[in-house]
Length: 327
Image (cartoon, helix red, strand yellow):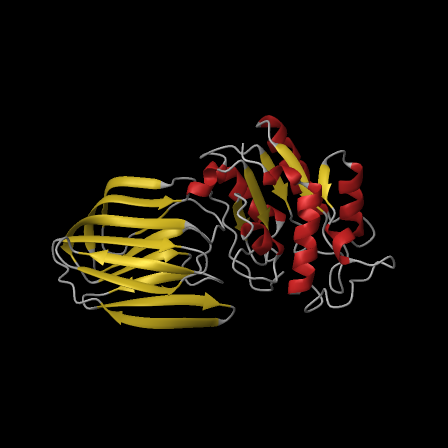
């Protein structure tokens, strides 16, 4: 859960690759909308007709966005965290007048950044997060683009996990960290502060690329508390997810949403437990017999500690053992 969320866009973009187009002065082009933040590549190459400044990355000045500003002599790496935008500057010493290739190879919590003009190459390793759409934007630049693409092999995995800030494979205080570090394969699409409406759109775009065998759906914490009944927005999009999975022959597995100091999720969880769908009982892992978080399991009233995350990972493997086996 996070108070600063990405701006929701109703116009869904599902394209992973664009070829043979002009990026003119002032143009901005985007690719598939998603919250994947590991094991992906953003690639761009083209013939330069005029070069001033080029912006390229994943998310443009939004929460947890990361992007490059490429000028004639430097590369600036920007990372937006909460209300702070951090910047690192590197000299590339490339003559940018004919050809430019940029590749951002995002690993677990940083990226290898490659720039080349066809003759000389500059390589940088930098912190790089990346949420939202991959994009490229021109200021005083005109390029005949050969290829602009977002590549993520994890779309081919049989297991997709969608969630919010509880999802991170680089943070030991998140349960997916412990699953990932045991070598299990899955696509992880987790938007801090994200609601069901956001991840529903991420899922729809992902399904234009591939269809998983299993979808683990862990949304609801940011949809808002249940008051006297199940949160209406959460219920609406949960039913949409059920329908989408039926239409695509996907096995849907819910994640129980832990009730915490700031968000009451009892009615959401009652719905899940009565739905007939399988679920991972994260409350069983985190709460005691009185319904309170176990001592040392909650960090801030919402998120788990490392100890809590380990307990959630253990519960996940218990309730969804299929992830252990190659298919």
